[in-house]
Image: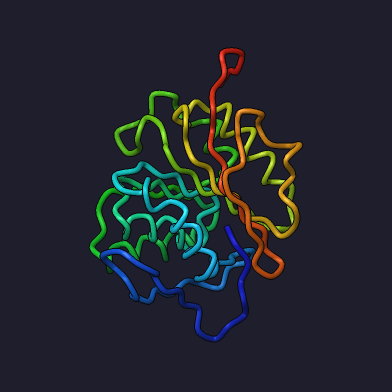
Length: 205
């Protein structure tokens, strides 16, 4: 979930794909901060060779900007998680407006959802994810906690990509040792990075 900008026009633009340039609205929710257009454009340029037919998990989905962008660009499935019922309702409304397919929505605390999600998945979600977006509210310790819970959940494929967005330096000391940094950039006060998971013989889920 991400921070409200206080703008009168709570809208975001899909950058590319089948819904290119479509504008979507999102509600005023404390902590809701859509990933900026230029950051999403950079992120999906990094991912352009891998996004097609990918199974994605959008933790702290907020406006759903990253997950919807992924669907627009050909992702096979996106699971959206957010603790705000207003945010989840808005994501559902926007996905229905776009006549989207291949998604699941859960109104739940992301850490609780990760802890309870079955290793075998369910009829609503893929067994494992190849791409995960983690963009928690900045004024929390949820980045490293979510990373640890995700690594332990059994929901990541062996060489999954993980996107992190944070207001300060990414706390690498709190990230799983199996996550290796691929790309890193800063936009204003926001740091955003792309990691790839590499399993070793001694690593555990």
